[in-house]
Every structure is written in structure tokens, then in C-alpha cells.
Length: 280
Image (tube, rainbow, N blue to C red; front, side, top):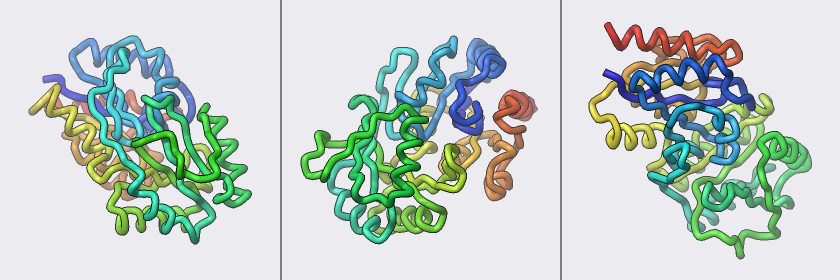
């Protein structure tokens, strides 16, 4: 019967910024050994996310930047990707021009996950926050005077950062005016800030999971676990949905299983309950 277990990282499989604990790693290893395919689907870049997963003692799939790139691990072999290009720039500039933020270009795995930004387009408060955030995420941020000579033809995603009101406006306008997928999530690094990660319209955690399932485990059950808005599409693809207790109320309302918080290794209890439901 084994199929796919799809897991968000931050706030689901591990507490924010922490590697997966030894207890969770051992439990997941047992599931992999019994035939389940494990896939971690995150908004993080490959470089940053792999830092949290590098000690896992089993093969797995890794979808980064909300599913824009999917890799087979530990080989780090790219098996699918869907990218953006510079045609989105005029629309993004129009959306950001009245906000205290600009958009940041995330270059992706094949370009060392560099982040390109224009510091002069951010408020001082946002710049201080982004400096602290980039250091916490071990990110390589490159300040450019303009994006006219950006050394990329395409890239997986762009991100905007801000308070709830600003980020909500940006998220809605990106989806309405440019047609990208742009979920709004609470930043686990600073809870008073929110992140909008925009990807190609066909890219989401759910589309990455659906494509992978069709290739490696068609017609098999899918267990998925998450804790925020960018996990909704992934949860929608699942046979059994695990939602962490820390999630927003509208996500909790969709859960088959509510798991204790990540800081308590709650994913173990959540997966055990999900497996019991699968067997019924």
C-alpha cells in the first residue's frame, strides 16, 4: 500500500530554522524503509533547505521555492522545474511602487541561490529586517542599482516582504494583475512580517506533488502535512491531510488529523494517526 508522504519543513517537520530532530529523522527513516516515498516541499531555497535535511539517512525528493524546482536526493538531480522571466518586471514594479518594499529575485539552485535586490527601493525598517533575515537564512544577497543587466535569463521566484496590510495587497495584485501564484504566509523569522513568494501560475506545492505522484506512485495514497497558506494546494492533493496545531483556523478546519506543534516533534503523532486512517 505505501505511497507518498509530502511534508512542509518549517513549523511542520521541524521548528523554524532547526534541522529535523533525531527522533523525527528516525521515524521518517522507518517509513522510507517500509516503502513510503518521502518528499519535502518548502518555500525555502535549495541551499537553505538542504542545510536542514542534509543528515537524513534515506533517499527523498525535495521540491523548493514552493515547487518551482524538484530534485531527487541525495544526488541533487533536477527532475522538474518551471521558471519565470523578465517579462514580469513591469507588472511587479507597478505593484511595488506605492509600497515600502520592492521585489527580490531568487535565482535558484543552478545559480547558487543568489538573491538580487535594489536596496534603494526599500524602507529603512525593511532593509534592517531583511539584513537580519538574510543572515539567519545564510542567503547571498546581491545589491544592484537596477535589474536592467541582471545576469539571469530566468529564475524560480520573486519575493516581497512587509506587514500584513502591505503584503496582502501585494499578494492579491500579483495574482490578479500578473497571473502568478503568490500565496501570503506569516514569516516564521519575524511574526510581525509576512512573505509573498510569487512563482509561475502553474507552480505550487500542490502541482509539484501532483506531478511527482503521477511519475512515481500513481493511484497510491498521499499523506500531506503543512501549517500555512502556501501548503493549501499540497493538502488538497492528499488522501489524508495533517495540519499542525499552530496553523491558521481555516487550515485546521480542513484537517483529517491535527498534529501537535513542530517544537514537540508533533509530526510523529500526526503521521501515526494518518497511517491508522489509511489502514481503515
